Length: 211
Image (cartoon, rainbow, N blue to C red; front, side, top):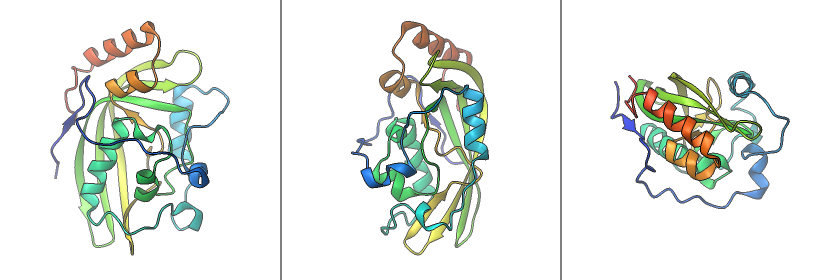
């Protein structure tokens, strides 16, 4: 079952997603950090192949009771992510995920996304999120690397006794997925990078929602 798609376009998502102050003691589980430069492909591969164990206690994040609806959690996670909120640790991220990653010095830019429900049981929910991927961002060298394609990510959620949580397995959830507007506001600084991003956006169909 495909849910209502979300075109991101070139304007910020119209949601109240105010970015909160990072939790210092939990920043090791999430947040940007200094690292040796990597290619965008290497950054993506590292996130895909990174080991994770949702049963390790230190991966639990915030165990406060929250998120009784898995679909609503996925929707809110994507809205906040594409707005640029997850470039640093936030209380929402730590309370929405189980061991979804320890940080990044890279990000991606997406023009739109759609959510398809694969299946929901009493204790597990699975979704496919299809992104209209425009390219990758990195802290060193050329900030934006165009790579227009459709990218599909699997979201697996587990129902804990304190609510649903997005797991870190089979995912790129710790790689921020920014809208065009968020990439310009929070990352890109040169006219060359912005021109490359605008060109990739036009090439993608200007925010056509992927199936």
